[in-house]
Image 1 (cartoon, rainbow, N blue to C red):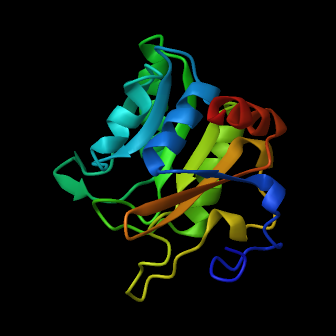
Image 2 (image 1 turned 30 degrees about the horizontal axis):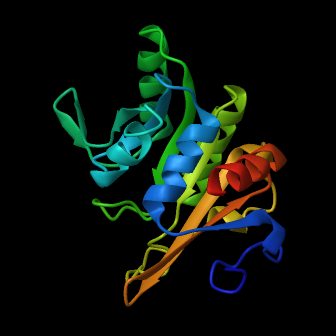
Length: 196
C-alpha cells in the first residue's frame, strides 16, 4: 500500500485490520459507526451489494447522493460537494441521524475517479458535521486512463484523521483479503471484538 498508493507516510501495520471480504468489512464498519436506523450517505448509482452490506445485519440505511442529476435542462454526471450537501440536508430534514459517507474511489459502476480537491472538500464537510468517511479503494490499481488516482492515504493532512477509514483488498483463486486502514483507536478495539 505504501508503494502503490504513494502514501505520505509508510503505512503502519498497527492501523490495518484484515477481514475475509468487503461484505464483512462494510458490515463491521456499519455496526461500529452507526445505530440501527441511522444513515450512511453514498453516491449512487453504486454496486448493489453495498446496500445489503450496511442494511442486512446492522440495519443502517444507505442514503442516496444522486450523481446523475438534471438542473435547468442541463445534466450533470459527476459527484460534487453541492450534491453531498444536498443529500445530507435532505436526510437531516427528514429527522435521520447521518453518521458517515461511503465513497468508492474509483467508483463502481461509473468508473469516476474523485480528484484530490473534491475529496478534501468532502473531508472538510464531514469534519464540520462530525461524520466518518469510509473510502473503498478496492479498484485503485485498476485505473487504465489518463485520470490519475489519488489515494486518501496520500494526503499529508486531513481535517480529522480519526474519522477517515480506507478499504483495500485483493482476491486470488477464491481467497479474499480486505484491509481496513484506520487511525481511530476506538474503531480498532471494536474491530477486534467484532472479529472475535
